[in-house]
Amino acid sequence: MVNTDSLLAGFAGLTLKHLVMFAVGGVLIWLAIAKDYEPNLLLPIGFGALLANIPFSAAVAPGGFLELLNRVGIMSELFPILIFIAIGAMCDFGPLLQHPSLMLFGGAAQFGVFFTLVAAAALGFPLKEAASIGIIGAADGPTSIYVATRFAPRLLAPITVAAYSYMALVPIIQPFVIRKLTTSKERRIRMTLSREGVSRTTLILFPIGVTLLAGMVAPISVPLIGSLMFGNLIRESGVVPNLSKSAQNELANLVTLLLGITIGSTMQAETFLTPTTLLILGLGLVAFVADTAGGVLFAKFLNLFLKTKINPMIGAAGISAFPMSARVIARMSTKEDPQNHILMHAVGANVSGQIASIMAGGLILALIK
Image (tube, rainbow, N blue to C red; front, side):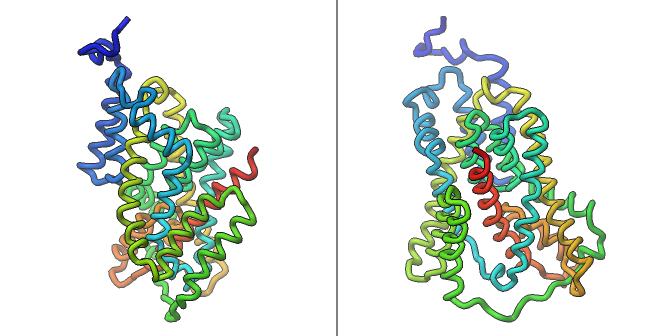
């Protein structure tokens, strides 16, 4: 029996599983530092995994600071809600309101959520766990956490790691899928911007209207959509610039830091190193690929009936990985044609994906009892 309070107790309790998790945490830290893949999240997640897997670590013991953060911030759903306020303050819905049809791509790009839900259920996961795994396809870390804490708390760590890891890999996953589904000619399609601006009144009424409508349809989604739209209202009101800046910077940075290290602390060897984790990571990749493919194929389908064609890459921006996906699509466009600038269209589709991912999460929470 090891005295957990004695010196060198960590060495006495060290197992191969702990060493594997040290390697996993090290890989996440390496991806953050060396490859610059979502460093704001992968760096604290990786370090949190190290802290959690030191044998007899007081950080994750009852009363430890990471156990407290997990109980207060994750299981209470507080951190995801605060993150959505920050994201809302960063979102500019102007491009979407200039081209409301872009909302269609936000919906189409949620295909991966429901496809993966069915696939996970077919592989034997209970329906609630399958739904939580499917939400990885929303490309929205906070929504994945929110749904998993309610439906599949035992799978919270692998689901969250999969969601954020694949979000970090959007610059690799999306271009690969897009090139397989489109021709160079399609990727060079030019799109014109509307010259009509969006009034301040419209920008203010939009978050209020979306909150009321979405809340009436799925009241269980109010914490998610309400916090996102509250952050956006702070931004667009123009009367609280300090609050808007604080939400975009201090709040976003602080909660991201605490969220990341807390999620990392849930990656304990005993529960993380299982075949289920590998299966979830695989299904998460399927979800991301299916989301991207769904958006692209939907745009190509619309082009069969439209005189003015849509660049099908816009469909891929309908996932919720904001603003990374929009930037990836814009770079691909200018690489094909340096004079083709579709960034604003991509941003419009991307913010619509942010709303659609929350609605997908809300619908799943409301429909699956």
